[in-house]
Length: 193
Image (cartoon, rainbow, N blue to C red; front, side, top):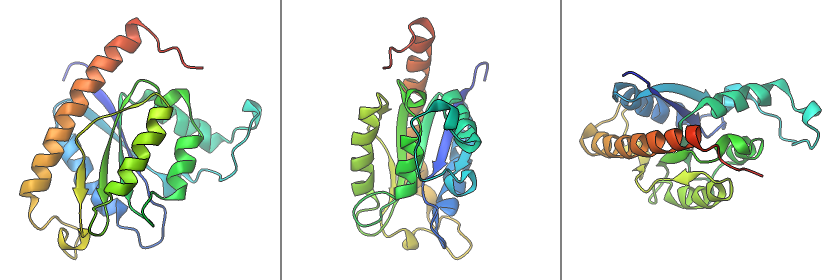
């Protein structure tokens, strides 16, 4: 791997008792095994971004500046997201809204989980949000419908066949987009307002 892609994996839930870390561990392992990526797991519960956004750049908290540097360094982003009330968690929206140019012209994908829909309603809404930030949401995702049927009591995948294949497909596509967009951003910086 001569020039690896930086992949930020965002743990999109901060709720007590969340399963996002378990799902993220599985996905981060798949991403680390992919030849193209170095992985930076960003847990929003650990980053602890403030809820109140500010207008003045001099008032931006250090936690936000540090988080922004990590997203800014990323060539691609994967969001691990549960579905709460047919949508995505509020702390994730805060994590998105604190930044702007850091998202531009970067590919985004999703690993979702939930009940019968597998978190896909949250993903569909996130696609709209990221489009507004000039990010490119790629087609393929990984989802876990009725996620409690996919993981054992220790947090291991019960039958990895289908989800590992889905992750490999998504990572291959993410790699293609990340290379293309990184190369183009390098030659032609994105004009972001």
